[in-house]
Length: 400
Image 1 (cartoon, rainbow, N blue to C red):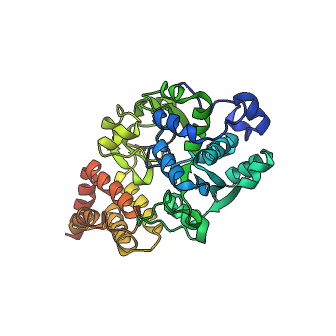
Image 2 (tube, rainbow, N blue to C red):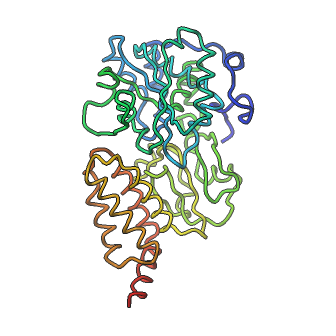
Image 3 (spheres, rainbow, N blue to C red):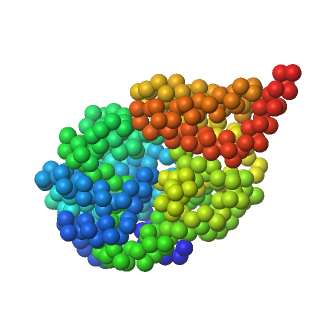
């Protein structure tokens, strides 16, 4: 829990680390090279943007198709409302992210780097522009900064590629995927900015150094919020327990009812079950949970899990890209039914509809947005089953 890597260095409250400070602390940027791909694969680094895809596999796929014409897209859109880690990195350690992006470009055969940052993250954009202006002119010519729209779906990798190309952030699951055919039809490496920061350190210190920490997966950034004494971003070792992270955040501010793991596309987990679980993406996935972008939100015992779930469902329904019926109409219907139950205005059939519709929507969307939303809802129906029943029974009694 105590080995800072990404967040080591000057006080995070002091603004962005400038280029001279960065080089004095970490030395010059290592050159990107195809020879780095094998050590990167051996490191076991997983993407930190949500999917936890093996980074070495993705780089090898892009490099094999590149022929010198690939694109690197550094994804800092961070549309997840409960995540702040990417903007913290960009506002405090922008050169670590830039190092990773330029190393990636040299490794996969790219002469174009796109720095894709949410337009709502003004401080991060300013810090990145200042940092890029400090870099060598050759790197400045290589890179461009694109302001991503402030939408939840804008950070999905296909949506990012589509926005850079057309100005519309539309996600899709239809092939080809970005690593095959992305920006301008070229193989495109889309990596979260935290992932690229990890790459910058692995390129300096090696894959064995990376595996020394945690359960072999290095460190990760976790956004902690809710019923904790000190909400914020923590750097923790992969495999740290949820209880360890809560303690590092100052402990609970009140008794906990549940933990939302993975953000709005994640899962509610009963608090008593959650404390011993490790923050390990592969371990959690094997049990049916997603670590996602490293979000932990603690629901206090005084809060209502049904009401909180209804609020999130309304948000996700409003964030639909409106390109298919299961998402545009299905999520709206689920959000409306969940809201009626939460308000004590639903009937028993609303609860039955939530259970049935959430299964019917899954796998039918043009992208993964509806799947993520119903995963959250289904976990809520399980963890807060008594609360959902109570809300429905109260409404039935009122009607009677």
